[in-house]
Image (cartoon, rainbow, N blue to C red):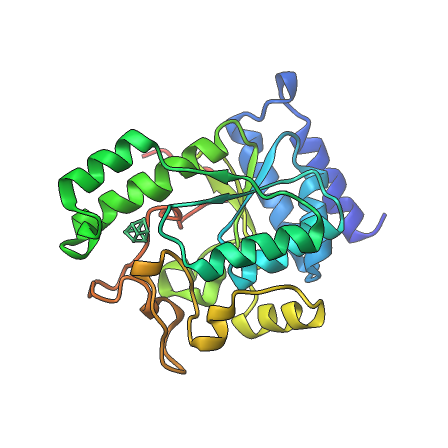
Length: 271
Ligand code: SF4
């Protein structure tokens, strides 16, 4: 048995331990470690297929249609993997993002369902802070992200065994420690970042090589694309995240979707 097969066998053994197929805390960490060991294979198609093989239960991939997400969606759709692909429609996305959503569905012949923010919460938010109230303070901005992004994400991930996301280590200092797979204690699942060690250039060349549709805003200087009022183009050489929430000056700029970056492959020691 070669190394790849050994790792897969080990992970499969871990993932099937536990009553009713449920992972307990101990084998969660072991499974995350075993999946991470599979990241020695740098081929994205194999990485994503391996995750599907090793994890029992629902796997959800959340796409915001960035270049990384488009690469992962390609790997899932082209291999017809049993992984749910969903997006969170905050209601404030760019028209170009909606166009790409449609293009992607046509390209792969697959519907990409959306999870929407809770209507009552959005009405209350807008009544309280105004339609663009997020510009007024960091707490107002975080309140908007909590309602339009974080809560819908929790619903999208409810009951899932694993969550696939398009994070890369070199996107920001905050993301420098992310792993291929780790336990996300906040969402109670295994979080997988198949592109954790890729550069932006590598993701772009994957997109070009496979003729994958991408957001036309990338050609106009937009690096990381989120909601329209909170994203702008950046100058060549600027860090990718400087185009997001540019009016905030804190170093740490996240929307709350990926706040748990110290994701672990080891159980934390008891204090
Ligand atoms: S990115 Fe901006 S518009 Fe989108 S949810 Fe956050 S604050 Fe609201």
